[in-house]
Image (cartoon, rainbow, N blue to C red; front, side, top):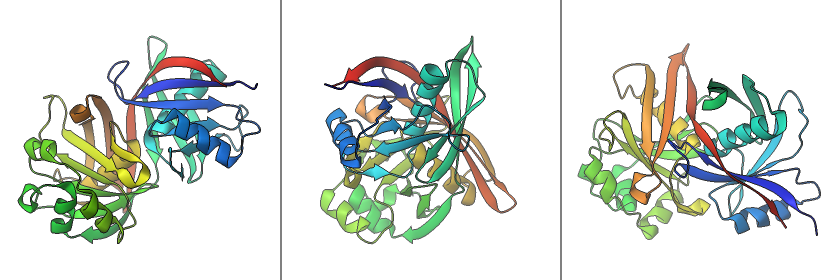
Length: 295
């Protein structure tokens, strides 16, 4: 019986056994699309990735990303986590950058090191694309909160750096904590949107040194709530710059996520408006948790 090596990593973790866990498989030779989808469902993480070859192609490594329900063209924590595995287990020496060839295109991941080990990894995301401005009453109903809990100064807006998310600004941490997705209202909302996920945020935080608190919900993608979401936080970074949330066209922030579900995570966001295009970087730490074989 064939055995397939895989790794479990914590991504966007301040320390091991926090953040968002990811399963990464090497050399899925002979696996069909349905076979990779089946493994992703059996692993039952928010995403599972497959490194298709251990040789570079077009200066990058071919990678596919699956949720338990479907394949994704791009996702943040799988991109960072898979780049980390490639550096640690395939290249096996310090490198400045690893490129991942994803369905959306090539995404570069750069490495910072501390005492010879990877510290913060950064991915450069696609330029944000902005979609609809959404009705706050409909969005607050889906979130199970009051319309007055939402920050009236800024819009609720669809944003994509590869996958669309609804970005919703709330006023207080108390409102963020109180959020409880109402399925009927949520599914009614996303029928009319490109985005199937909702990211909420506020400027109050659990830890004083952080700048924003974030929660992310994507039940339509098989994720009731995610502890750390790189793609959606990239959308958030673009949103913050476009709408001048902090009064300027450049940000360098720490976003905490996952506290409400006991998986505290930390994401680093950098973005700026350069000649009419917003450039987005999302960073975080990655820790190896386990190595194994899938039979």
